[in-house]
Length: 121
Image (cartoon, rainbow, N blue to C red; front, top):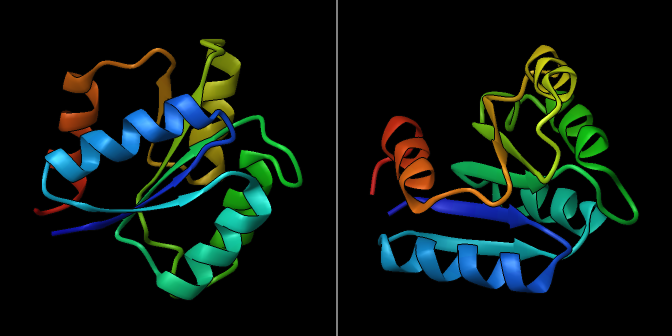
């Protein structure tokens, strides 16, 4: 069972993602802004992180940059969640060290694929 951190400021999206992760047999951790998400990542060292791109207090880019500075977290799979499908954002995310980028609304099949490739139940 993997511990998966969801950093998402939209409560409905966060709740749906947490519910899905529980049903898939994982232990979700949650944060409603970037700062809280970074603090939780440092404290809990999750197996995978889903992080919204545009959030209050810290953007997803800032969260990823901070995580990249932490040796214990640097290798943690990190996926951006965003409503924007601009190719430049995806390219920048990958250049920064993100494992991938899911465009909202994402499908359950997309989430399952990420989980199958990056964590073990």
